[in-house]
Image (cartoon, rainbow, N blue to C red; front, side, top):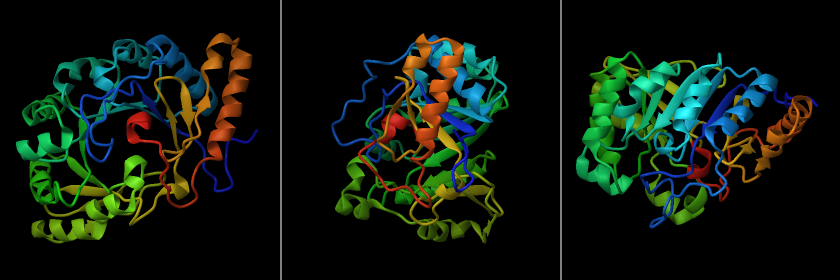
Length: 320
């Protein structure tokens, strides 16, 4: 079975969700009032890493990113970090940063060199309103701790018109003082935000964000790197980027594959087609590899040609 699709895409980057649970309940991620719990079928660290190893054997992965939910509250975190030391892939992590400070040294020891922190406001009140939990100061101190040990940090922000549009400038100001790239993720039509009215009320397009950042001077857009979801811009103060499924779709050369904490494979962030690879855990290696190849071929067919169209799948499950 070919593992390259008609657009020339192949899986080279793996997102591994360590848990579906999260200590936050951000409005763009989950419906109001939701409780973000771990999957009852979540795998332990050893089994999850065996599946990662099988995927790596077949795909020769370039990148492995740990996600959630919130990966730093996952009970299998230590076992996963220990298992990652055997991999040659570039290791990174996406986190809300609430507990980053206490895990920085362990992440570094596991070979993690890049951290993406989701942060939507520099105002403590707005922060708490959007996240429903946590405290801003802990996140900021965690970021400083990661920078202090030499990790490369990026910030991810989801602008919402009625909540944090006025935080765009303060966030970039803070990031630019520390050499951190700030990336704006356009609101996505996924899960509860498939509702047209709710989406339209909160959506802030990329062009509007560029205008807001013009207070820092003229900005130049850099060429987009192959397989990147982000467009990067640079001005006199620093770098900022956009992940814009609506304004500038990026599916055409996407190389991402997603593995959930309970052993389900997804070929696209907007797909609800879960492909179970847990049976590979009970098979001898040749049979396990054959099963993985079959599931990867199916997952590749779920990738979108231009932009993804949201389904009921929510970000909490797939980890962004």
